[in-house]
Each structure stands twice: as structure tokens, then as C-alpha cells.
Length: 164
Image (cartoon, rainbow, N blue to C red):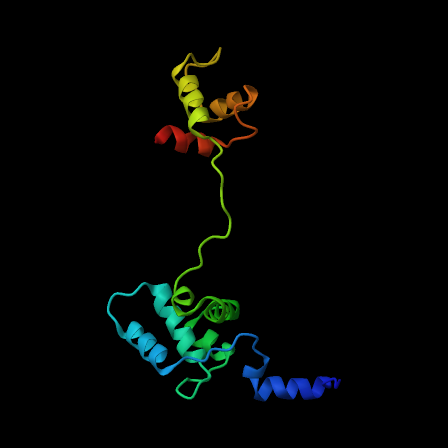
């Protein structure tokens, strides 16, 4: 097992930056032509155009531009991390997912489901608390927690539920 000296490693990274990249972009001629058409098309979402430009410039195949991440970042005014994420998505998921935004990873569960929504509406339509002329969103949220319908709820969730 040979260990690369720090000086040799710096030399390699300076003159051969594509060797340091974990995810390398190698586009076929068809993919290259498709991305080129996409960039020159009239109506394309900005993020798709930007991702297509990133992939074309990062391409290290024979028809590619062979740009470094730093060059791409400076040319398009985007972070190097964005370039890395687009390359990674191309390698793991393919061309189309790399062009589009990644779906959010988190899955939010509804705080107020159908049954709790009915309780909230009944509470809001009922008598206002003593000393008040009407319900506020925060008071409704506090009462929902007091009555153990929900563990916790924000006034914004109450607002959005009543708005429906």
C-alpha cells in the first residue's frame, strides 16, 4: 500500500482535478445533444437550464468542455456544492432527475386531521372564552392542546385549517 505524499497529492489535484472528483460526468453524444438543445430552447425552467449548463461544462468525455468546478462556479455564479449535487444525482439517478430539483426528503404528517379539524371548527363556532369577544388563533391552538386533541399546534396551522 503506497501513501501519496501531501506535495504529490496537491500536484495531482492542481493539474488533474477530475481525478479528485467522486462523481464524474461522462455524457454520451445523444445526451450532450439533448442538453445543448435544452439550453437553446425558448421556454425552459431556469433551474433546468442551469443544471444542463453545469452538466455540459463538467463533462469529461471527448465532446465535453472539461471545466473545473471552480470555473463553473465563477461562470454561472453558483456554489461548488450545487455542482457536486448535480453531478451526484446524474451518477445515481440519471439525466432527467439531475436536471430537475430534488423532491424534499422530509415527509410532514398532518397535525390536524379530519376529526381534529371538526373539533377545531366546533370550537371556533362556539362561545368565545370568558372576557373575550372572539376567538384568536392562538387561543384556539391553546384550547386544542388543553382538550388533548393535539400535543402541540401553531397558530399558523390553525389559520390554514380554518381558511380551507
